[in-house]
Length: 432
Length: 150
Image (cartoon, rainbow over all chains, first blue to last red; front, top):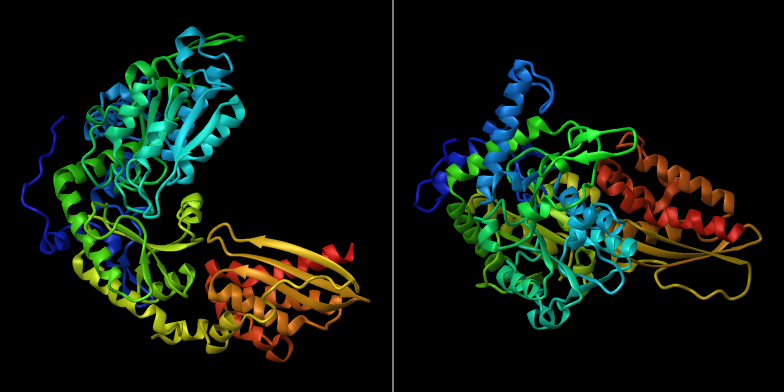
């Protein structure tokens, strides 16, 4: 496998315009205006190489993987496993530490249900580390996406464990002082987001991991908004589990991945069970394959995995460092521009503090849905609502906000056009 | 700004969104029966609590408390103006008529004589993502009446 290498010079608007040519959808007109796509935080667009990878698989190699001995099946299996190699390398993991899931939500549920199954006695003594119950604590943060909150609420409810959370301050930053007292001997799991999908904050992973490790707790990182946007190395982060989704990193929907330390994955009882994850099956019981196959029951998302590898290659060839720098530039432009507009409150870190290239904001006197509708009429696609983070919005005294999120294909001209449009919102709705 | 957008957000809608006729929940004065409904749009967090009082088959009072976009709030306001004092069956018919317009994707022209200011919300029907906003208060009224009727 050859690892593509990226140029070193920073991305520029000129280069981004070239990049845009690789994304057919970016030529679309919306409401008779050129599409300005600022909703990558929800889902990203796909370069032609990703679309072709999926088509090429169906045209030339389509077969079920890990079963059957005919040539097509062998070909498909090779491509499927090569995709795993690519994704493992992309996040610095060993290949057997990457489990395919349908999305990040399923990846987090997989971990939660493994704990649950271990707590119900499945997995035997090898799974003792995953047994939790009354007296044990699961710690999350107040800024989590529902995907990294609700599965833990459910796990706590099923096992009798207690769910606790690290609060955020008025700017939405994690209260690390509180974290130091909340994470203690009773803590079994610390689950938190790497980068907030609402605030854009990049959380201090090292501090939280150190606290968790000090007390023997396992860490679960929601990397949905980091893996697509900045270089991530799971071993450098020293986390135990990490979930991320394909469709937020130029890949197709229906595919995501769970990273887990090999020794942990191999000790965990399975979540979904059925074909392809077993060694011996009798009418009474079954024995399971080692990870990652243990967690991949049933026919897999083969074309999606292959297309996701094409997406990772596209990102690697462009350069994750350069993408991160470019988005920092756009993020700064967004925050600086929005902060200068009257009646706009930008959530998250103040201008000048590091953030990923997104900004969620409240427009005084105009509901987010109306803001979104106004922008849509100018061809600008943003996200409105609570962004699957109701507790965070409630903490910040809001029910819904508007979010603009950028990627490697957004130009600074687009951000300017967006800012000019936002400036027109309050006058249009007659808010003084 | 485009005509489409002005068609959606007509001045009368923006005015109702600010004035909010019927806003502020009224206490039950003992006459007739009170029905209450709480409706939430989980997509955007828009919500409304609505109280309806039914006396001798007539809707004598509509009051509500809500938070949401210009469409959902103006819709609650125009609905309050339209419905107060009407008979229960007439109210239910109007809710159905409004729903038909909203679900029509712009194909059904509203009868202004019948729907009053609510006819100005017809533009919403072209935006499927916003129909729920417009319907929120109407669904609440429907449910509150059913509760009052029990």
